[in-house]
Length: 147
Image (cartoon, rainbow, N blue to C red):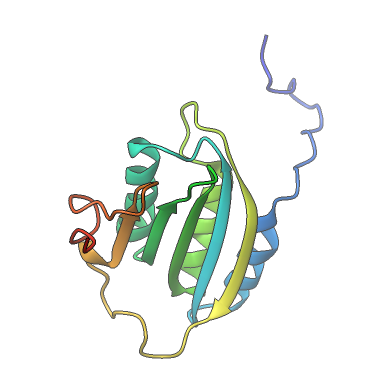
């Protein structure tokens, strides 16, 4: 059986998401720098999700930020950059990385970023990954955290 409606049938209504309003607000800022902070529920743990999210933010959207797995089984993702790029990343997050990982944006907020706070050209060290125990992954986003 297929979940796709037959040709000519109305598509099912979309489910509102916490990130939808934030994505719209970010898009409305155009190229002005903004920061979006999201808390994710679902299967947002693991190396695949961390790597795909980092690549999507840093290399495909040229955003800076971090992904932090939290002890309560949620994941925090913070991205910053031009509003249109942040909006595009939020829309990608709503779809998720694909495969079998189902995630939802439980909370999302947007704030303006002062001019000059963001790097002109993000590099590999500008998006950090943190494991559940709080340590920084040196192979995927910078130097190891101090003990």
